Amino acid sequence: MNPEERPVLTIAAIDDDSAALALVRAALKQYPVEVLTYTDARNGLEAVLERRPQVVLVDLKMPDMDGLQVLDRIMESAPGTEVMLVTGHYSPESAVEAIRRGAADYITKPVSITGLRERIGKIIEETRRREEAARLDTELLKAHQFEGMIGRSAQMLEVFSRIRRVAPHYRTALVTGATGTGKELVAAALHRLSPAAANRFAVCNCSAVVETLFESELFGHVKGAFTGASQDKPGLLEYANGGTVFLDEIGEMPLEMQSKLLRFLENREIQRVGSPAVRSVDVRVIAATNRDLSELIAEKKFREDLYYRLAVVEIKLPRLTERLEDLPLLVRHMIGEFSAQFNKPIKGLTPRAQLLLSRYNWPGNIRELKSTLGSACMMAAGDTIDVADLPERLRERAGQAGDTDAGALLPLAEVERRYVLRVLEHTGGNKAAAAKILGINRATVYRMTGREPQSEDGDEAEATHA
Image 1 (tube, rainbow, N blue to C red):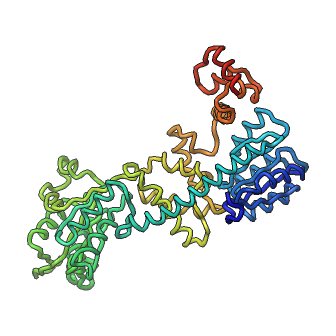
Image 2: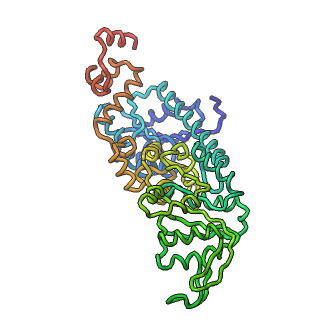
Image 3: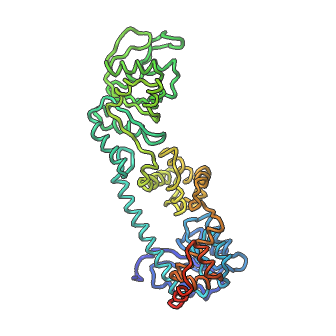
């Protein structure tokens, strides 16, 4: 790599042995990295929390403050930082404990210059890939935004295409989907792309209207029509004349009102409550529901003829779990919005937080995702959202689903297994060499990794080639 390249990474090394720090500086001289070194643990920690380097090498045994204490503080305040513990006093117990508490690696002294260079080289390449991915995500966001909605999944691209095709022509439309999938956004998009875009877009939440006032809400009333009617009032259909009325949660509309709505859709005429006068109204009607209308029809709670009248155009929205390929774009977009709103330079999520989001079942869909990220952005102490910043309900449900990978804590047996696998990777799969480093026998290596033991000859051959 060209030493004149701009620094890709900032690396901090904390060790009370100045010779060890000099070795780190010399080993990484050829890389495009900025190396910060500290012989005092407390000063080094303070600098790390202020400078936020991407990687920290910290000695396990230091006076006043040991490496695990430094690790805990970094994981608490800067969870996006990759911390590698370095020690001249290796033990499997301390290695397991370090990884359980969030360490990315555990390096024994004397530090292998070749091994350190390889590890930092991989991190540099990973950083470049993340930067390139972030750049591509920004471009994808621009390319896959449609009327306030984001999606590149086949399901959402079909929704966008359907909206474009029907918006110029529809008179009535039905939008269906689970709670929080974005039905009002679809209704607003249909309105904005229709010939009625310059006129009003009026919203009625059918589940929030008192049954006795429903007719007045939609059709209006005249003064004295009922107790409390102190003046004439136009209904939403008249108010939005020339525009669009969005009837959210149409499945909650009383049967009597369903009959009157059907009659309006057939003749486009209204009568205010208490008035004999008939008025013609030119308005588009979009209805939405999270209920299964076919079930309501079977239960005689929804008129079948009204359903067919509304569903001349029907747009079905998928659940978030059915379009998980859209999750990274949605997360990046929402974090960008909240970062600007809260004036906090939040870059993104830690890998374990990303894993938790991808494995959660999102019963509240996009609305729940937005609420979750808004809360996490407020809670984040640094520039990265970690598992601890996410709402408790999310962590609990993920844990109930058996998602131990996504949480901050793992069972000790799983931590031990992962460390054994990491040592095996370091030895190129050589079980005999891994067993020697770990201080255990080969049979235990097989047992902890869940692999079938080979013949004794195979192990000896493996050790020979190490």
